[in-house]
Amino acid sequence: MDGMLSQEEINALLNGANMPSADPTPAADAYVPSETLSDSEKDAIGEVSNISMGTAATTLSALINRKVNITTPDVSYSTWDNLMSEVNIPCVCIQIYYTAGLEGNNILILKENDVKIITDLMMGGDGTGNTGDLTELQLSAIGEAMNQMMGSASTSMSSMLNKKIDISPPTASLVKLTEVIKPTDIADFLTGDFVKVTFKMEVDNLINSEIMQMYSFDFARSIYDKLIDMTSEQKAPAPKLAQAPEQRQEPIQSEPVRDTKRQEEQGMFAQQPYAYPNGMYAPQTPSAPYQAAPVQNVNIAPVQFQPFTEMNNPLLKTENIDLLLDVPLEVTAELGRTSKSIKEVLDFAPGTIIELNRLAGEPVDVLVNGKYVAKGEVVVIEETFGIKVTEVIK
Image 1 (cartoon, rainbow, N blue to C red):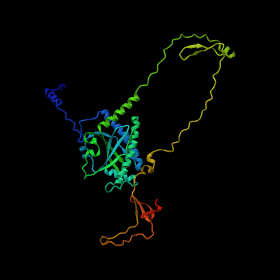
Image 2: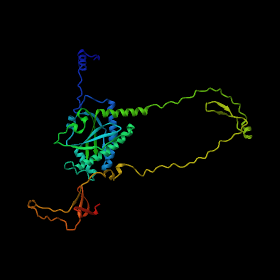
Image 3: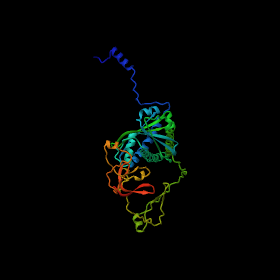
Image 4: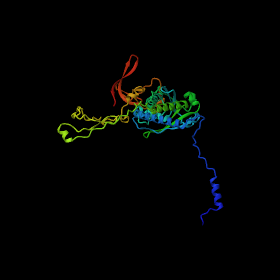
C-alpha cells in the first residue's frame, strides 16, 4: 500500500465528522428556575454554608456526645412542589430569623427519624428509643439543639463577614401526612423559586441522612454582597507615606590611614571613615581617642511554653448539662405494679381492689422520662400528693 486514502474512505471520515454528537442527559432532579445565581454567588453561598454547618456540627457533637460529620453542601434551586416530592413526610421544619447583621430568614428541614435519634441522645438515651410519634417534648428539645447549633454558626458568619450576626430562637414545626401544608404556612419566600442547600449528615452508625436548608434569592445575594464588601476592605492598599526629596551631598574624602602600630601605642585608632545614614562617609577626628559604646544591661530569661496536657476538645467533654437546663422532662411516681389476665381485667368494676406488688410503707419509684432515677415516700402537701425523695439511684 502507498499510504494514500481512497475516495470512499475520505467520504466515510467526512460523514462521521459531520454527525451530531449526543447531548448529555440532564440530571433528573435538576431544576432550572426563572431566576438563578451567578457562579460566584453560588460559590460564596456554598462556602458560607460549609463553614457555618461545620461549626454547627461541632456544637451538636457536644450536645449528644457523639461524632457528627456534615459534608460539603450542594447548592441548587427548587420550588415548594418539588421540595415536597423530595422530602419524606412527616418531617420537621425549623425556621430561623436573623435579628442583627442580616435581614431575612431561612428554613431547615430534618427527617422525623433523625430528630427522634438526636433528641433521644440529648436526653441520655442510646439513640434507639425512636418509636412512636414525635412529642412536644422532642420538638422543644430539637428547637433548643438548633438554637445552640445556629448560634455557633452565626458566630462563624460574624467572623467571616466581619460584623455581628445574631438570630432569634428557632421555631420547630412538624409536617404530617394528614395535613395540607401551604408554603405560606412555613415562609413567604417558599411560594416561588428559592435556593436549596443540601448537606449529608452522619452521626456514628445511627444517622446517615440529609439536611436541607432553604434561602430566598434576595437573602443569598445579601450574604454574597457583604462577603464581597468585607473582602474589598481587606484588600484595600495602605496609603503611601510622602517621601522627603533626596538631598545630594558631595562625598568627603578621608585622610590616608596612619601607622596603626604607633596609634595603638598612643591609645588611638587608625582614622577610619564613618558611615552616615545617607550613604556618605566622613573621617573621624584624628585627635579624638577611641571610646567604646556603653554596654546596656538586658534581662534575659528562658521562654515559658504552655503545657499541652489539657485539650479543649468539645468531643472529649462528657457533661454538657448546662446546655440542656431549659429542656422540660416528665417526672412520674410509680406506686406499684401487678399483672392480670384479660378475664380479670374485664371483671373490673367500681369498688374492685387491685393488689400491687409493693408492701405498705415501702418507697415508691420515681421515673424521669421513663427511666428509674430515685426512690421516695408519698406525702401530702395541703390537698396535693407529693413525693419526698429518700434515695437517688446512680
